[in-house]
Image (tube, rainbow, N blue to C red):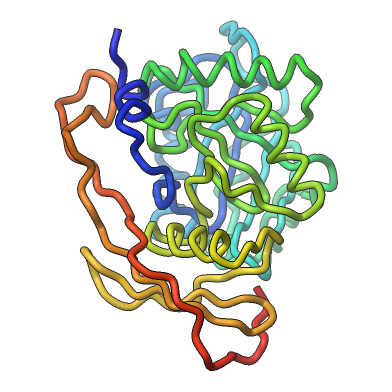
Length: 314
């Protein structure tokens, strides 16, 4: 049976520049079943879900539900749940965690400040602490959004957890069903597609050493799609793997063509030309959807500039 994932893989659709955009992620543990729009179709109070969506609107904060890998019996409301907040912009990357007995307290967060990378309200409202354990590996498994996420994502999450990988969670939505299994790594915010267990373990091993694996990478969620593609192109061209070494400092132009300036922490600059192309022939962007031609980010040129900026804090 053909799926959106098999079609995308067969057509070798590029991954770069396809990650969900979010400078800050807010993750709420919610066991049990999830609907397509999980914040309002799970055991989380739908009124609270709507209020959280409204509070996060336009702030740069993206909210998702998470649960431990495995079977998801309908166990009702947990006595307490894990909550994480992560900021992904280089120069101010952080991941904080807390336990919450009542998720209503999340409405007391300063979402605008969180989106700008200020964790103060998260610490004050939830008595949160910096997460000092393994990086988080979030695997999209929400089959109500697309069956590929369940058919491919859930086995991956289960395999990783069974093999002793810490920090693995199932997550409601990372975008790009046709790239399943999709995985987001926090705190640095790099997303990966068509992931396999051995590759995820390699990515996590690199992160422990402060290195970013570019193979299979969709981009850093801190940037818009042209910036994601540009940053990955510079990493490849310069052989740069250090986490936090590059930042997208300027994007000029509008679709279908952008000039993106990428800066290194040591002051080097690159100008990257990114063009919006069309993926052909048509293919389903989700299982059951009509055939479409999704946009793709094509890197046209990568040029290191002669002038050197004052070293930036990436």
